[in-house]
Image 1 (cartoon, rainbow, N blue to C red):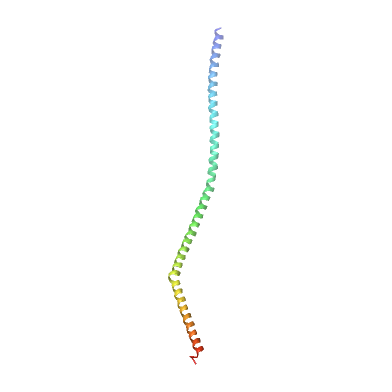
Image 2: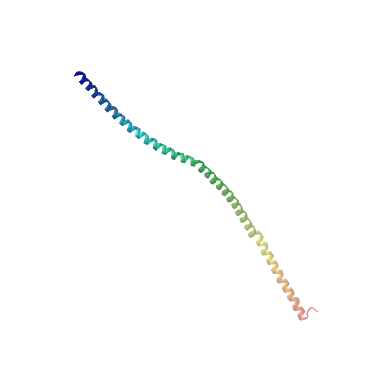
Length: 133
């Protein structure tokens, strides 16, 4: 009976060890499941990162287009400022140089016209009264 009890003792020990191994395997299975979930979330994160990285060239090209547009607008603004400065100088020249000349010319023309009208009027009056015959 010793053989039988020894066999039962060995069987009990084997069963106990198997139970511990199964517990460890269950724990490792749980760890493996967590690792798989972590890998899936990392895979999702990598996919999102890949999408973001794929957008970088497009964003870079957009940035270059914005810079070119800004440079073109700057060039147009500089040209417009130059035209405005030219316009200011032209208005100043008109106000300070041309307008006084025109006003003097109008004055001289008006005086000349009035003088001519007076002379013609005097001549007509003198002819009418017979002073010039």
